[in-house]
Amino acid sequence: MSASVILLVGTADTKSDELAYLRERVQALGAQVLLMDVGVLAAGHVAVDITNTEVAQAAGTTLQAVIASGDENTAMQAMAQGAALTAARLHAEGRIHGLLALGGTMGTDLAFDVAAALPLGVPKVVVSTVAYSHLIPPERITPDLIMVLWAGGLYGLNSLCRSALAQGAGAAVGAVRAAQPPRADRPLVGITSLGKSCLRYMVNLKPALEARGYEVAVFHTTGMGGRAFEALAAAGRFAAVMDFSLQELANHLGGSVVTAGADRLLGAGRNGTPQIVAPGAVDMVDFPAWQPVPDSLAGRAVHVHNRLIASATSAAPLRRSIAREIAARLGQAQGPTCLMLPLRGVEAWDLPGEPLHDPEGLEAFNRELQACMASGPSASTLEFQALDLHINDDAFCEAALQVFDRWVAERKVVAGGPVTQAQTLDTGRATPGFPASGAAA
Image (cartoon, rainbow, N blue to C red):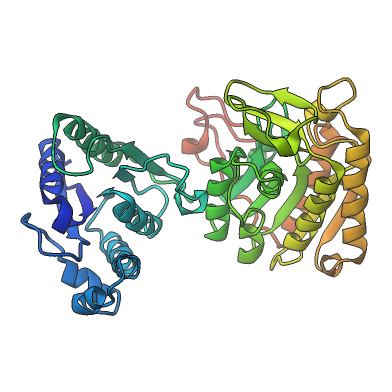
C-alpha cells in the first residue's frame, strides 16, 4: 500500500487546514499524497507538491493572467483545465493511483473536470458541500465517481467536518486498495434496460452474447445509469451497444428530473460504435414517487414502482415528439445503426390488463416513427425493422441477435474474444457457451 499515491486537489488559499487534515488522514491509512493547489486568491499556508502556478502553466496561461481576468468563473475554468491535464499526465506516468478532491461549488466544479480526465477504474472521490445536489448536471458525473457530503465544512475545521473529511480519505484509500480496473480481454457490449419486471430481454441476451465471446454490461436507465452508458459509449469503450431502453430520453423531453442529460442516444452514434436500438419504455415519464404527480402528467395512468420512482403514461403529442427525436438522433450516427420497432408494445406495463395499457398512444408513436424512417434524413443511413411483436417476446431477442451476428460476419462488429479460465464463474461452472474451469478452450 505504501506505493499507492492519492492526488489531493483543492484550493490552498481558502482550505489549507482542511487539505492538511485530509493529507494527514490519507497518510495515516498507509497511502502517499500528491497535493495540487488550484486556488487563485492567495498563497495558502499548507505545503503543496504542485503549485497553482504550475497548474495555470499546464492550461497554457499564467497565474497572473488568470487572476487578472477579474472573473472567478473564468479563472476557475482555466485552473480546471490545467488541473485536468496535469492529472491525466500524472496518471499516464504512473505517479498517481486515485483522486481525492475537496470543494464547495467552485472546487466541485473543478473536481468534475479532473475526474473526467482519469480513466474508468481509477478511484475518484469528491468531498463536497453540494454532493448529490440538483445543481449537478448528470453529464458532469463520471461513471465511477464517489461523493461524500462535506457537512459543516464551509469555513474552518470542526468535529462534524473532520468526520466527513476522514470518511472521504478512507473512501479514497480503500478504493485504491480494492480497485480492479476493467479488463480488456473480451469485446464489451453495452445493453440498456430497466428491471426485469418492466424489460427482461437482457435475461436472454446476456448469456447469448457471452456464449459468443463477449463481455456484457447492462445499464439501469434511471438517469445516472444512462449517463454512465453515454459516457462510455462516447469514449469508445463498447464493441457494440444494444440500446433498448430509451426512457431517459422520453423523461428528458417530458421534463422529468430522471434524465441522463441532453445527449442521450448520441454517444455511440457520434463515436461510430455499432448500435442496435429499440424504443423500450418510451411510453412513460418517470417522476419521484414521494412527490405529487406533475401537472404535465395529471390525469394520465400511473404505475408506482416503489417509494422512490413512479411512472405515468405520456400523451400522444409527446410520444410523437419522442419518435421524431429518436429518428433525428439516430440520423446523426457515424457507424452501423439498426432501429427495431416492436409494434405490440415497449414495456411490460403496457400490455392489455396492465396499468399503463394505452393502445392509442402506442399507435401514435408507431405511426410517427415509421413515417420518420420512411421519409426522414435518417432513412438512407440506418437499418429499420418494424416487428410484429412485443419487446419482451423471445422473438425480439432473436431478431436483435440476427442483426448482431450479421454485423459480426460483415466485420462491422469485432468478433468475440477467446475464453480463459478467469472468465468463468466463481463456482467453477462455465458461463453459458464457455468451457468449464480447467477444461480446454
